[in-house]
Image 1 (cartoon, rainbow over the protein chains, first blue to last red):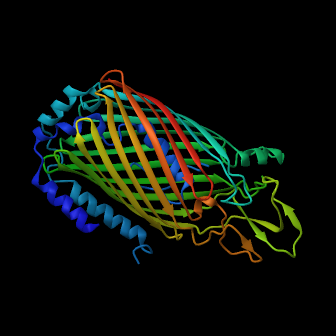
Image 2 (cartoon, rainbow over the protein chains, first blue to last red):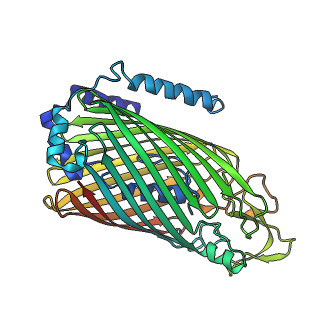
Image 3 (cartoon, each protein chain N blue to C red):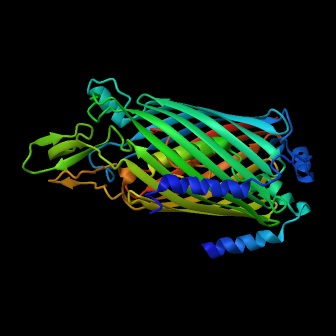
Length: 66
Length: 409
């Protein structure tokens, strides 16, 4: 895992220039454009699984849920 | 050792994170860079200019059945209907606010059971109101600070939360490091499985620290990785959960809410440790195969001090069906967890100090698949509709559905 992350870091350090970033403005490349969905999935997973936390999620607290 | 001295560890990690993220040029405000100018001209949704923002409305549905393979003594059938409104607004070029309002209506077999017992109880939370308000301030083009305050209330559960973050862009905005801190102070009215509520209230405290690393890897691939640590103390069991202690020498009892279940034994309330430390690492990588197709691979590893460990793998496919008008997302999610140390689906003869029959703390795996369509009426108005089906190995199969609008201005 650490090697993988280190590899990614080395790629990133090469630097993608501004004019090369056009694809990231494409709607299908956006991370988390739907806040309602994040809110819903976070609550569902928190309520129905023994683990919690991760992308866009708080790991516990704030909800008795079901 | 680290878990034992968690407050000190937490403070050191927080201090280290702030030292890395907050540079000497803390208040060196600069004019908007070329990238942000282009973003705001292409789509108001990306704009950080004053007066712009977005409003989202969603209506979410959750339902699960129960074939009896999970908790053998409880019908866990449940449905939840949740409208939610989310907004954000740029008050100035540097300062923005955001908020969430949500309501849940929950109906479940266990609520019906309590009503049948003659007690007016919402012990499983037959409604939920939640609200949060946050703000973010851009100290300079590469550094943002923010915070939020949240409240929620249920019939037997109240919560107040406080959060904050600092985010720093590096490497010509190819890298963003973000540190989030969240704390919740919750209050639980203790209403037991049989409707009795003579134990007053108890508290639950949650402190969570999450580090995120966003990285643009190539002109067509970007990624996000994170690590999260959470510590909880207080009343961590679910007040209305129970455990059936089976003993052939005791009288036969009916667990009432699953009428075909008659056992010899007695019922005890759920008991679980009053501390829990959770840790997880997670990440995802998305790449653009062409202007109309993207794929993503995401995953997470999790472990906690209650003995639960889990793995999540989630590949996704994004496809424009009609260029700039209609997109589809197909996703698959595999999730598997081990049981908590104190979980058993059957307790025989002895009553352990800690015990739970909550199937969500048991071992199971889940396979979920979902489809989502997004229709772009214009660059500023989007309609979403999605559905997911999750098949769980313990029979708690789930259906998720959602519709929503997003308007950027």
